[in-house]
Image 1 (cartoon, rainbow over the protein chains, first blue to last red):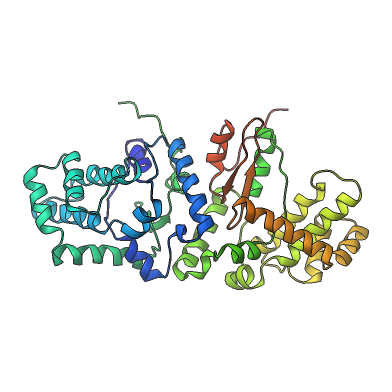
Image 2 (cartoon, rainbow over the protein chains, first blue to last red):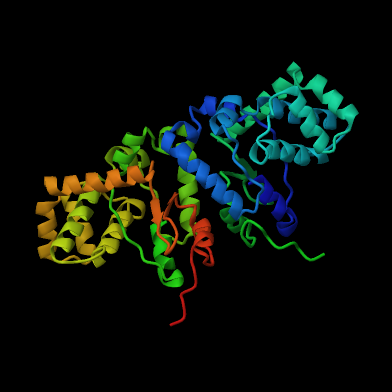
Length: 212
Length: 212
């Protein structure tokens, strides 16, 4: 959903505010469980992801041990690292998301969903940060910061905000429209509905670039 | 999904074979559970259904006691009634689905999802059958047949076939393409993907009628 939303950003002229949150915490708090724990759902899910990846023209290759990577290992360290980036960005007077947040999030995605690489170890976090274009000094700063209680509390707060908003899983999208109450959408399969609710045109998962 | 698929039948020139099955049985056999049993998912699901109903231009109004109608009462009697219709159709030498199966399925849908009416009592089955255009003689025949072990065994077999095919919920679609292995799709939100896999064009949930 994130990638497709980013493709539509210039087409629909929308702003995207990323909020790194901890999926495991959302699942636990709401009594939800990952689809893959139901064996037949897990089998279907894998073929579904591969088909959707092709359809959406994403460089997607399933990790060899899907269950271990997605369910057992999860993404807590990566989310803390992303949260630390936002804290540093704000401390430097930045407003809205850091321009690096999207590229760092994408690098984590690529490691898991395209190259079957780890995102839980310190080396992995550093490698992703380098590829996302973060400077060595900033990476050093995030390495120190991402395990502090400041980061942990901030990630907990964003996660709780999502739960209070109604989230029970991810992706969870909060849509703000001028003059209307905000509303939330769950799942990567509500993009065409989102277009309709925004009064915008849906061109499929790969929209034509707008004319400059 | 069924309604949208029926809209696309003449557009994509596809055949649809309905297989009445028992969702509760699929859920139980696969260890799956209805989304609405997770409270936050249940809340989201209701707004999601209403939004999708509008987007798809369906006459959708949620039943007042959603949980009771969908989870507690379910659709076992209605599925047996549909199964009985198929058995009578075949005994009369019919090949493929009875032409009445789609209209009778739709009448059950309308009772639940549009008019908040019952589909579990004998009177409800009869009323739906009348509205679907079944003759009094045929309705009489189905009333006698739908609680017999012949119907129960047939419904069990179709349900088991779905489970063996990989189903863990509904809607479950098995797609047959000439010269290719068949594949399965789950959920009402895979229609655009289906179009892509069929090599056909997706026009959104309400396609223009093909020119005669």
